[in-house]
Image 1 (cartoon, one colour):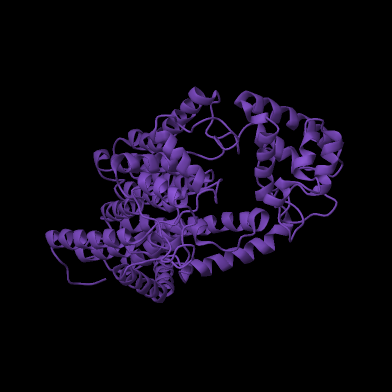
Image 2 (image 1 turned 135 degrees about the vertical axis):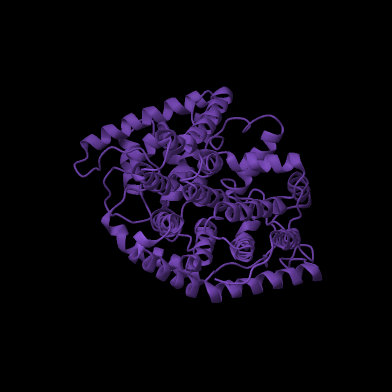
Length: 547
């Protein structure tokens, strides 16, 4: 740790200048859009945002209306109402999170200079400006929400022995960030292990500390994040119920559709393939034995099927797991099943009954399940571990972090206007019409060069600092009982966050090997990068001797 320090006012001035520069860099970037090119992702959220801003919630009911969680659409609508450009808004989220990290971790990051280092390293992290963040996609803000949750719990734990008034605010922030993260992605559950472990450790501290007063009240505050998250989730469910008559966050990964699709994945295969959870031979049996499913044949498996051409993979000759459920829902729309929500609900419930009846007659079928993910099998272990190790190396070396795109947004002039006007943001466009050569000014190129140079600095420092942090944690645990309380907490926080990053990597690796097969993509690993930065910066703090 550096011995020299700067005063508080100077730190604030420098931090403000660095934040302003970071906003200028964000403003120099251009969003990447391709209307009608990502109907299940970017298009979906944009259309939701337009509908929300217009007071129509998620719009007219169809097979996509409740297919994903809506927070990112709410966020885009809020940026529109506030007049904040999309990429600038995302950057502001990182700056707010960086400032919150400094505040929350103040008890262990004690000098103004090192707090400035923490703030700077966080907001200039390559994952905050990488090319995948230029998409209008929920994973541009999901990592911020997750990081706020981790750091808020850490801030609360570090002040555990102080007056409750000094730490309750951190539990409120933890609750708000968990609520937003939970309703941003369907796999928000991955945050729970950190919450459970952190709260359990702190409750033990509360119980064994004989001098600590108001023990029951302190323990009761641990429920604040759950209460806030539950309230927010129930609010969205209530809005969905008002507009569509179903009290749920999603009718895709919950409810009768998940029951029906999960039942399909339990049926035995003639020839198992890791990427295909419901292969053609299973579907052929379903056409025979499930009256409700027979009508799907002409759309899913007929030789001239347009749906099959659009959704299946020629290399496999079948639908990947991550393709089939969308193909099934799209077909249901063509068949009129999504003419109303209740009609769709009743249909999938009936199909689930029919498929489960098949399952009972199938000697090699799996137990009953309700899920969109393929059943976990031993055969997945080796490829998932291999992909996870590759992804960890991908993260630690900051791969796929360019600050701009060489390709241009795919759209017509009218579509450009619709997206740019709503999001108050420019999209990258062609220097020559009908070409794929993007137009950027000289100033933009200088900004891009600066950001790309920063990425090389992070690549050079990350692995050495990570090793130093791991050494500091091991060394700290060896002398754990002699460590001050705040450092004891950090000895749990740092490896806890790191394990959460690894857990995230394994979740994504499983989906890659079992459903998508798109290769390692930084956007889905996004929540791990801020954790890596925090661990690298905070590691040396554990090595500093307290006076």
